[in-house]
Length: 97
Image (cartoon, rainbow, N blue to C red; front, side, top):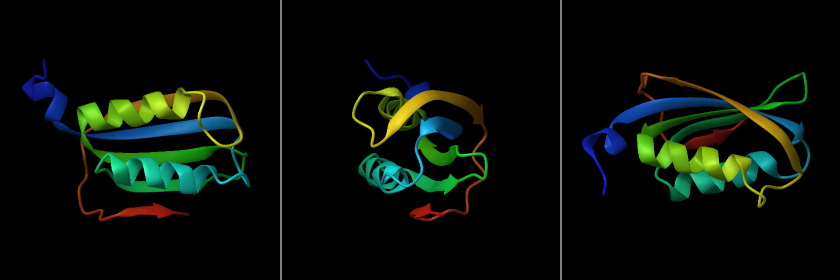
């Protein structure tokens, strides 16, 4: 049963570490985020991690986080750190950076 809290708009910032650059990881994240109706970006960081910023319903952001931690990602995800915050809005679509 879904509650109002499940559909409250939130901002998820997640950092994936492991072998996540140069393996189609950002493209894969973008495809999953768009399927879930989320907006945001996936960005390669200098330290080898990928930063994922997604805004939308909490339930969709939680599902994206599950997928990031799941076995189906390109490359090899060694771990994902997350931070939840209020949505900032203003984003449209989902960008790979």
